[in-house]
Length: 170
Image (tube, rainbow, N blue to C red; front, side, top):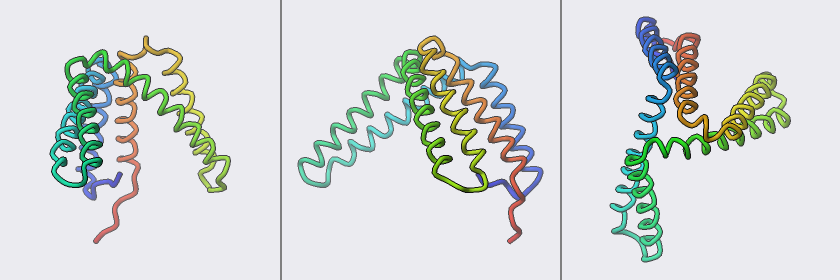
């Protein structure tokens, strides 16, 4: 993330990120539901885009675009119609994603010799543990986990924005 050159703009953006993080953590069900609805909307748009691409190419490529578009469209509509049920699936997916990412970070730390190797190792351990905890507690954690994790991510983005080095003058 690049930081705005203006200190006032940087602090304003960080304050907005902290406020958003606080709301997401305080109201995790609301933030998870809004995120799920957003993902559903993006999936519908992607499905429509795939269907609009059916005019070019040979018959087999059009068939695969049609199937892809229908899958996106169907999944997106399902997510929009049943956002709470979709949160349950999304939580399990995020759990597996975090567990896999954590293992990859651990492998990267084991293979690398860089100066931040310890931080990469710590990141891998924490990420893998979060993923395993989401999977182990699924589906009972589904209605709060995504919103809480999103809020924590926003808070880290705010800290990153505040602590980022100043942009070089042009």
